[in-house]
Amino acid sequence: MIYSFIESAKFLIEIAILWFVFYMLLLFIKGTRTVQVLKGIIIIVVIFLITKELQLETINWILAKLFTISVIAFVIIFQPELRRGLARIGQFGMFSSQQETLEEIVKAALVMSKKKIGALIAIEREIGLKPYIESGIRLDSQVTSEILNTIFTPNAPLHDGGVIVQGSILAAAGCLFPLTQNPHVSSSLGTRHRAAMGLSEETDAVVVVVSEETGDISISVNGRLTRHLDEQEFGRVLSNIFRPKKSRKSIFDFWGKIVSKMVDSKTEK
Image (cartoon, rainbow, N blue to C red; front, top):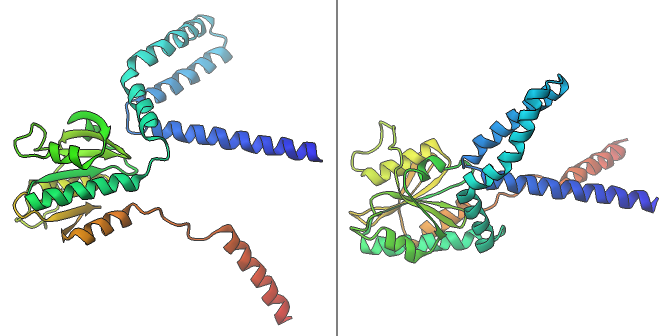
């Protein structure tokens, strides 16, 4: 009995570890060109299995040799992505605090607001921003208020575009965002605000804007722009957006309801 329990526990632990590794792998390749290559590899594997089943020896031999070479080719071709991913894990860990990143963004935005320095900061969520990252200059640096202030300093090479934050990493700067297609947008809004709304319309990114003319701070989410945020409101709104959602109902609540119904039914009888 004890032996079977241990074996079952080992089986569940193995499944949990494999699930975690697979999940982290998906996060690792999300928003990169590796996704397309992975699809190609899956297609080749399917073709390999079909040719093996049909006993097409020549094609099967070619595919077998191709697999051997593809391992080395994969490492060479995707060396930049692998290096960035490993550096991300090594520098910040898988459990790095997003709250620290948000605090750095808030700190930078408040400084730029006081100095009336225009800024455009996109924070990636579920939908990858890889196409927009490729339109700018790759940085892959830690998010700090000093770096953000330096990037958006007037007449700096990258101050005209937007920056993209992925997790705890400042992925790129000088990025081009799509302008909003909303015809009801006020004509008083400048290009930065329109770009913030445009990106949040096409993705689930949260975009922070600092006005160069007034120093006002705004946040755009789902195509909607919240303007004129003061210091307290800005930090609170940004934290609330990224606050982990609590599960609506726990398993204990579920069983509690069942038990209470059973008790009620017995009482009625």
